[in-house]
Image (tube, rainbow, N blue to C red; front, side, top):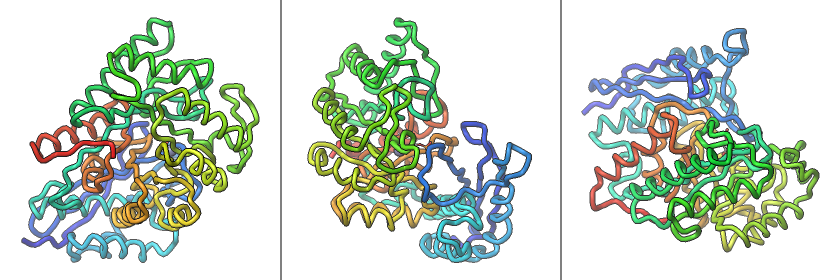
Length: 423
Ligand code: PGA
Ligand code: ZN
């Protein structure tokens, strides 16, 4: 078989928020065709790879015609004739061609689109499903779906400071059952919100954003929903939180202002005491970005205090970049890293970030972005990376469900060989 790249081209399409993003097409000499689409975040870390936006009048500056053009010209020229199965060579060729340390010249959106489409093409050409191509024959573990169910922070207009509350079906026997647990609880929560006269409209990731009067009410509504759906909190279903603390730290340091809930100014130790109270009261098993990205001492203190009980995940501080994850490992900030392909911009560098976590005995938590497309690359990638859990939105919105449905498909395809467990 000849998996030599014959052509690469791109197109400006829209993401789930109606903002432009890049869709990339790759064809190989053997006739294989593949397509990929790039996601986009809203609450981003300072050091993420740069999404190239046109900054012109169209789409209020958010157009990606320059990124598309970079794929069609420079990147295509550099990669045509290369073997699609040499993913590392393909990705490092693009990194060198870009020449910056944050992919700001060609655009991480241009580069990632090509990187993902090349991986898909190589998989098709090898006659393997993408998860098996990237993860090998033992890539059989279907991730526990940490389902976004309720939102605050920058993802909602309410009195909740923390950005995401997720349901974690770690007590389910299979992915299929886990997905049912969380989807049923999602619908039960909708009924509870309705009966209390609260809003049931959903945010960008499909979670509810009711006008709770404070942070505790948010979490108590979720526990009520778990019970009412006939599941046991802490046994069948637990809770994961992404504080996205950057959004209530005006200078991204150790000064916090919990303005949405009215709690007001807080220090890192105030936040840690509040977290201790919650961890005492509620079945929380994972906490992401409990402090802001500049508060490294805060991450260390939080991990020291709670890291033996729960998973402490760094997102905005690590941005899927081995440079920052390495620092985190050295100083004991967190015990897990969030992994988002578009934070770093190539499949190879994302795999390197995962490998670094694994070698340090850390966990790694695969994630979508708040702006997504119908591309299901993430589902296959999560199985391939064998990390055991992912977050990819709630039980509604097509671009989120597409990933869950792909995971159902993979589990079905693996038949008795699939595995499902939290740890
Ligand atoms: P984003 O948020 O995709 O809007 O950046 C997700 C997160 O903070 O995990
Ligand atoms: Zn986050």
